[in-house]
Amino acid sequence: MRVAIAQMNTHTGALSETCERMLAYACRAQEGDADLVIYPAPTLTGLMVLSDATIDDFLGDLFTALQALAEKLPIPALIPVVVQKDGELL
Image (cartoon, rainbow, N blue to C red; front, top):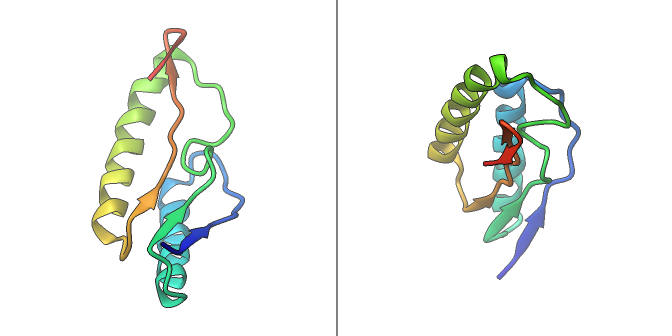
């Protein structure tokens, strides 16, 4: 199995732009005959703290973006997502 590791910097809240870049990395990995692409942990969520008042909206946007990205990826991908709500990791 050939594994590609995508090292990329992202901006918190820029889900659309980040997903486009992630798709480009996956396409490049596929062209290099990779079977799997792995992204860093905070790629989609960023290193941020959200209030409980805004977390639900963000989670909805996050999961919508993740679903759309998953449908477009040309190869399997590992996309870690770490989210905390009400003091609990989700």
